Image (cartoon, rainbow, N blue to C red; front, top):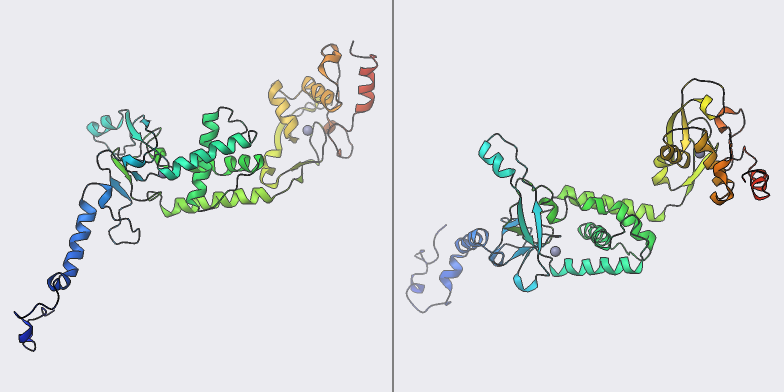
Length: 366
Ligand SMILES: [Zn+2]
Ligand SMILES: [Zn+2]
């Protein structure tokens, strides 16, 4: 390209009055742009980073300037003035694939990284704390406050990546969010790149150029899928799930169990039983369907047998422990050893009302 002013057609413009004070700068724009891009991608410190994710030279992970820390949740490089606390994340070592003994030794060493929370993530943490206070039963098994708060915070973080509002306005929503979203946060939150074992390319002095910039598109898609399964679970209603084989639970005989469709696979279990130990005569070993209640009882008792069946029958009849049931020998037959239709309710092939009456009147049990 000919330089401006090099043409003989405009000699009178050269060396005369300046048209624009920055004419040279304007003429040199392409070169300056290149120079600026070089500066923005090589200068240490997030103040100079390229923050347009569509820009040609955008780097999702940047080196931290002095005093800056990565947000442990979204990863964003955070200036000292907007850091909320400091946390030490311990890495038990670093993933290493290769065969250099020196690098392998280095990779096996424990190290610590100081992280913080950015303002957005600090607000999300506070929201998680508030949600747990307002809906204390939503946390389920996570009884400790710190764990419950992290569980909800991580569910909210996954939703943030998927750009969705979970509306955690009930204990049920909290429970479903923890079930469907919290596990997805591993591999998504910045700190999970460091703990328990650091990824090969996770550097202590690095941060994300933008919140979640370190998250690749396929992981964002996984977050969106997790949110979709949470939303599906919110709208589903319990339905009768029928026994996969045999027409009913081999023990209590119940034909179907009410459950959410998404939990259907957990409702029924397969068991190996011998009819002779369940009130029948055959000593063969059969593979049968059992409902979750009976399967859990068998697991607690260690085997499918008369004592666990007696316990289940007494429970189904509403007979409490204090009525002296320890001294009673009760040999209820499993539904499976009888040749009858499946039961509408568990243990309906046993006269539960009569049994209860006998206990309450003291005819048995004391
Ligand atoms: Zn953050
Ligand atoms: Zn059962």
